[in-house]
Length: 218
Image 1: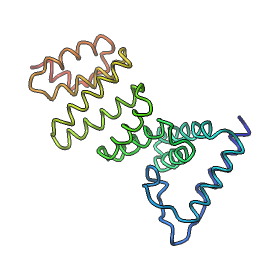
Image 2: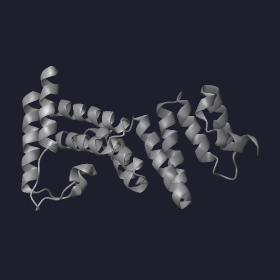
Image 3: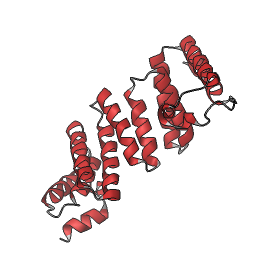
Image 4: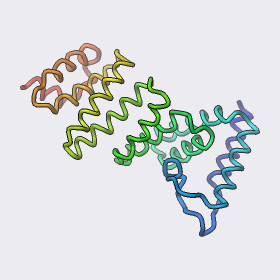
């Protein structure tokens, strides 16, 4: 493992420390899947050096998993550009790793690009439909789209997604709290009150106080 990690230090330098010609579009490594933008010759050469260095250290799947872990590390440290770079490197290594698209979706969500985030969550779920956390995150994007647009189709999509998360993780109070909040937007709030009781049984702190106040005072 020490050999692998030391190799990745070199890889990071190769992938981020280069100056490109004017023919290259700058900053594409800060966009999911490099923004789908055609790379210039220098960028393609960097990709090849990056992949060759990884191949000398470990398998591409293992290298991608390492990059994903680094991507999450930077994400939670709020170093979002660096996080995107790491997820992009993971994508170069293993485009079938479902967590890569989950990472892309979350990074777009933090930029309030909720509509753009959804196809990445969906792609992650197509590769791994059993990840409750991805269902929860795509539900959050749908919910935010509903708040922005007041279009009920996004609210219904948010509810469907969070129900799938609950099916996979039925003891998670946060999921029930999110479902309660989603149902609170309906005029008939019987379902919201039902899930409020479940949430409070599992963890009373998992419910938004404003949502609880709304449901208990009406």
